[in-house]
Image 1 (cartoon, helix red, strand yellow):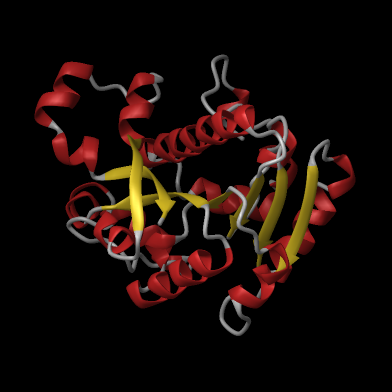
Image 2 (cartoon, helix red, strand yellow):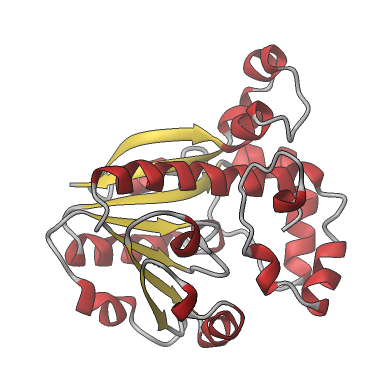
Length: 253
């Protein structure tokens, strides 16, 4: 929301303000000091936006499945796509109230799922296809146990043999050096990091994925000017910062 109000927005999400209320603003106030993580979140979203735009340019009818969609508004902002959003019932209900499906120019379905008690495979079974599919899990994997991630990947392979998976992954070095205070604040809200490894992409490659793209989230924020670090210093002396938190795009098979 704040980014969209800037003179030169990075993410240009003009729908973000639709979801903000008094409670949201109160939560946001405790994160004002986390300027670099806030900039990173916007850059993360922009990287995935650009990836999906590229895919939709080649296939305007491409199914795009957002697991843990939250308040994602890409179905409203991007041109093309057959969008499927999955999240907890209370999130979907709030989202339907604030940003109804009827306002979306693209095809959009919202599916409720209780991730603790309901089967992801059963919820997605109706969309199973051998055709190309893009799956987005943004801001999700870091909060999951490794075994849950492996089960999720098995489900995606089974239902969508020809899919690409876009997600963000963080190394343990990046977490320890740059994300500790952020994690403390998230922990107070009941959200804890559970998946940070020296090389988190290995879990995906070992699950029959091919890594086809990797983009530094902080690097994108630096390029956009939202994090003020000279580029040559960033590239030469801050490798952990540059490479530790990235968007990965994997291809099944």
